[in-house]
Length: 341
Image (cartoon, rainbow, N blue to C red; front, side, top):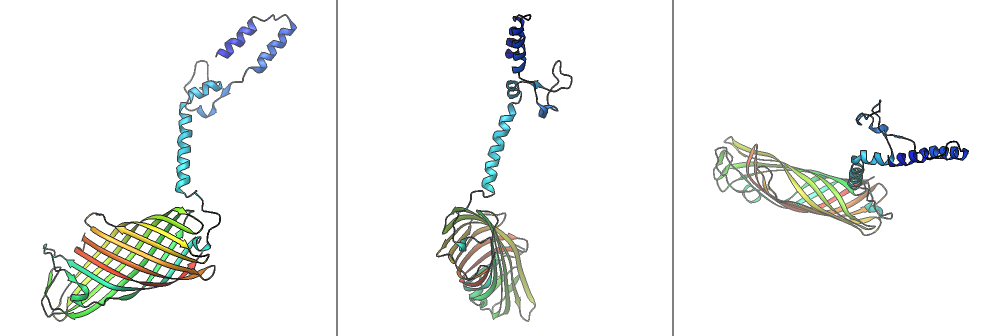
């Protein structure tokens, strides 16, 4: 408003009869800034005196004072944009990386030898009886090794972000005359009873990975995922018709570390380790899963690999269909074929 008062005073003191004054008057009109219409505030602005449409007429100075939230919104928008850039993986990868580290999708199918089994189970009865601690290999005669088919998928969804999925299942059976009494669930199996036993175990692992460090020949990252274990353990006394079965589906959250190193453009060494050691609902215990792989890219879209996997589980479960404890440990070699995209 000070600008308009000064302009009015200049016009009032001028000699209007003088032609030169007319030129000054026109120059003042020419430099007067036009009114700025804040069209974006038409709906929000209050109706001002002398303003029939409720439209704010303001100079640049009035606009900044009348819109104090604009700067805050711009600042918040910038912060959210920066966070979104980080979350979607805008931190790029190095321009020159070993091709063996740079696959978008890798699918591995192969066989795994699960060796050095140690399986322990205890199944409480519905009345609260604790049950017998069973060593599946020593007490029931389960084999200490088996072979399984395994599927692994690694998908890089953005520069530094990826998902991994693994699946395999184990099914073991045995029959033996037991030399000790076994309390399993609501059934007591006497000494010298011929017992058939079955142990089935499915593992589904899903994890999200983020690369903290990505270099030309090596990667290092963290993972967060879930190990879902679907298990079934059953005993049946041959000839006397007594049987019981324990079933449980237990998901365990795991935190992991991932690393890979390219020995050359076609060969890489990869290490994945995942652990669980917290309490979830009525389930508690620990889980360790570690895998070391050596991969070789034979061609642009396929490769082969060999690896070593160690697994150790010790949990107390209170699930529908299972109340007791489970311990399961194995290690073994993997051999597989990879599809690369």
